[in-house]
Length: 476
Image 1: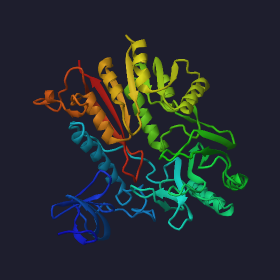
Image 2: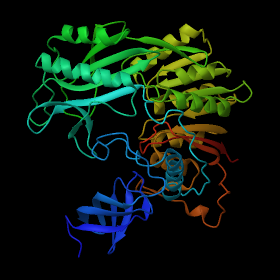
Image 3: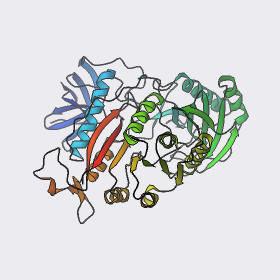
Image 4: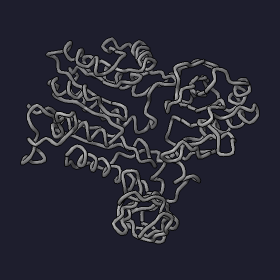
């Protein structure tokens, strides 16, 4: 009988959704991070619950051919780059498989999914840094990443998927905190000051935000001195957040230094962004993804396009360059204001920005544009598309839609609903649609949508995450 702390040597049979090795032993399926299919490993049993177990690699006895040398000293301890031990081409194949398996298991869709589009930079690609600041078990201030499924901070000095500027910024904030006796926030005792360090690089300029549990932070002039020696063009915010939640930012932002916003250009669109404006973290892959999205939505130039969950309006503006009219719907007020400034900056009279919930405004815009060739693009957060929005879409009659998703599980659920393969029962639960029994994989019921094209993109190399574009078309 297998028990906790046992050491087991066995063959890894597969790879899980989160990059863990899958090992089956004595009727128990173990998930063990850091190992790859076809490897023989020794692992320590950490936990067993029913027929599911979790383990920690002790030794790789027979390495897989596609095992890569990891670059990070805290690999497996940090909750981030769980695929760093896998060669990059194999990562791309794995992520395509993850999308395919989610579509099959959750959405009931059996689709061929091509290999993910690669990032030209497998490392050093992130334009955004987001780190918790806290204390360790001895009460010392630490900056780092959360360990997997916990709020224990793993201290770091650098991160392989961030450029060199992130290492400089981490060192500066650590030095400032030590010199000026500024403590990290203790979530348990509710003491200390700094909670997060957030920074974004835009065209060689930096928006830096310190999130604090107090409205005032001592000796910020000293921090500015350090920053000015290392960063030529930056802006600094102080954000106040004393709420006991997992949300990083509070509502109050205080501009300490600089302009507050920075401007850049992409695909002929001049745009600006602030501390909470959403932008994809990988500029190289973002360009590839947006180019493909534009081609799927604007085919002839006479389309009226609705960009739902439109963020700072960058994609909306690109669409406005090609379409007859474009509407961007975004809940975040700062992002919507950025979109308005972007519209004015680029002279896009055919672009309308709406600040509010997608479920409140989508049907109004569709009614307003009745009779036009309406196309819809949806780029929702990880939670996916709201159920109310999905119901509106099924009633709308829109012929073609493009979905952009960063979460294969919610994408599969949403496509299952839009394809009619998932329906609600009387209790509001999603169940398989019995009307599909006997139909082939290529057949779609009238009034629902069929997937015409699907393509994953590796927006987040070395991690378990994957971005996906899906084009769907209504069956009459």
